[in-house]
Amino acid sequence: MVHKIECEHCGNKINIEQSIWKSISIDLNSKYVKKDVEMKVREKALNDEKEKQDEEVAFLVAQERSVLVKKYNDAQKIQEEMIQTEVDKRLILDKELLDKQIREEVKNDLEDAKQKNIENNKIKIENMRLEATVNTMESQHKIDIEIKVAEAINLSEKKAIEDREQQRSENDVKMKQMQKSIEDVHRQSNQGSMQIQGEAQEQTIKSFLKYNFPLDIIEPIKQGARGGDCLQHVVNNNNQKCGIIYYESKRTKNFENSWIQKFKADMREKNVDIGVLATQAMPKGMKRAGLVKGIWVCLLEEFKMISHILRKQLIEIYKIRSISENREDIVSHLYRYLTSSEFKMDMEAIVEGFTEMRSDIDSEKKAFNRIWSKRGKQLEKIMLSTVNMYGSLQGISNNSIETINGLELPGADYSQIKK
Image 1 (cartoon, rainbow, N blue to C red):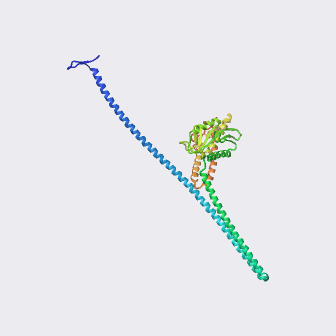
Image 2 (tube, rainbow, N blue to C red):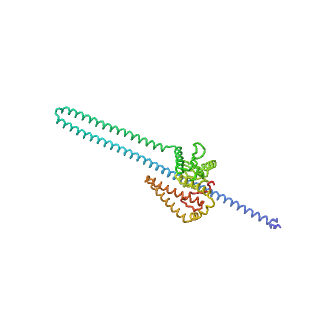
Image 3 (cartoon, rainbow, N blue to C red):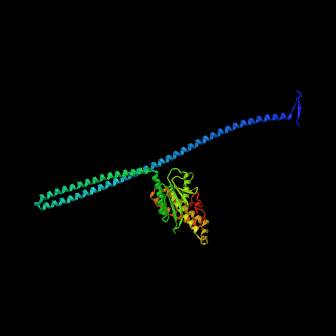
């Protein structure tokens, strides 16, 4: 129903509802426009504030990156200067020591020869004089002989001195040549190409595998062919092939993620069980060895321990597959012990002791290189024995014993190993 009223001035009828809705619509439109303007102003202010904050963050990040780069460059420069200073000091000390030894030898030889000649002269002259007094008839003849002998002795002494001086000159020349050779070797070692260093790293890996695993077949990959450095065909004491480990080394300053995909493709092509990538530069966020998309990535110094662990795992997994069902009762008691907290605590104590000893050796390495080398070999032998024992026990228990952090690698997942 439409409600209308009559205007008392003009007499026209006015629709009340229409007038009210029109008034409300005008008021709402006015408020909406006002709110819209306020929202746009507020949005612009927020955008301006965000841009300002982004600029500040970018400036701080760039400033921090510049500081870190400068610190790294300064540290590298200081290290290079220290190495060069140490080499120069060593060369100077070696030269001084060699020169001193040569001078002392020449001096001693000259003094001995001179003293010996003087004594011989005295003896011979005295004998001649005694003979001259006994036999006056031959005195003049004896005097002539004495003069000739003295001249011969003087000539001999002079020749000995000249020979010593000649020897000294030759030694000086040899010393200069030796110093030049040392400087050339030092310069060439600093300027060695990355290719030579990479080939040396590859040879180190192959030599280590051949020496430490004589039962295994180390198959080198031909230079220029697609693939890594070598294949390790793991063979146990019963001459049974247990699996294949694929090794590749990289010696670059930066890690490239594209290596992983190529490496996995090579593994599938060669039908191997485990892949190990030994690199100088680790992936971003990784400081120690670990799994990256199913590939073991490690530093060269970690390669030795990893090769022992992975080889042992392949052998033990093969052994577990070959064990008959009636052997399960035999190892049940051993299994309960290996999965107990007591065994875990004992192993952790051993690993903790090894870790502390390793830390002490690293801190002494710079000042006591000889001692460090000897202890490092002893520690490596102990550590490898422990790793072998731990790997054997893991294999027997089918990886059911509690994990010992010091003997495991970050991200380890042995389910990746080909069954």
